[in-house]
Image (cartoon, rainbow, N blue to C red; front, top):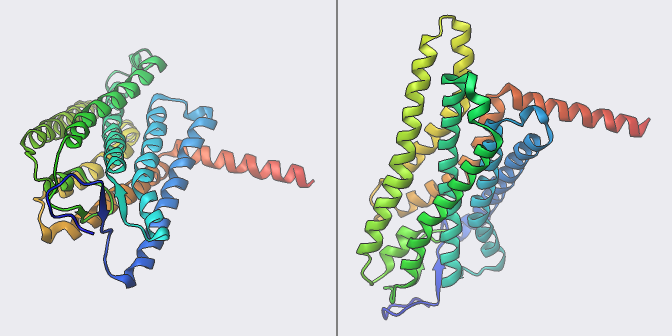
Length: 318
């Protein structure tokens, strides 16, 4: 039952991707397929990096963490979609809704910061190669990942704590397939001005503009250094080392801009839902594909593992 008496709700009702009964099974199959591909692709990349010593470099260390973050952010959202289809229960407790916001925001923000750390890694590798091993040592890489996770969590927690203090909501129906903080704020009849200001300052500047500028500045120096290389082979090789990362960064920032810089309205909610599905499921699929197809090291590692597996199978059979 929808609450309209402006009281604090105990649960929300998630409308999902569509209300059309005929579309429920196709949507379920689509979400399940995207989720399985996301798990399979990112877990394959993660295991390859862990098992192949040729990939034990800072760039692939960050990529392994990015794969785990992609799996985590997708699981936080899509596993609830699948469970709700099976159980036919569209309700989500208020506390669970806040928890989902916290974890999803942390994982997504951390992924964005990891990509920024990867741009710094590419900057050092191309612009200061003689000191690369010294600057990007194992301790620094671990520290950068910890900082990315800590900053992401510290950015999300104030939003969730402020939202938890809201005393009333106009209704408890969310026109989405997960608890989107912007939509929950719009449903509240409490004063959300402080939260919206904090969300804008931290979201746009701290985890939007700042990582973008750091990445942009890194690539300005990278491109300037590449252009100074005299041989075309050297320029091509230098650009190849950062092409995968640059492709992922462009894809991620483009999708974020298209989704979050649009004004929220009833007419645009269906558009936002399917765009959110693309961000939460399709983009994590594209990341391992881009890095696998555009990196000879990953493809070579995959071939080595397959050859080793086939050789082991022949030995057992023989």
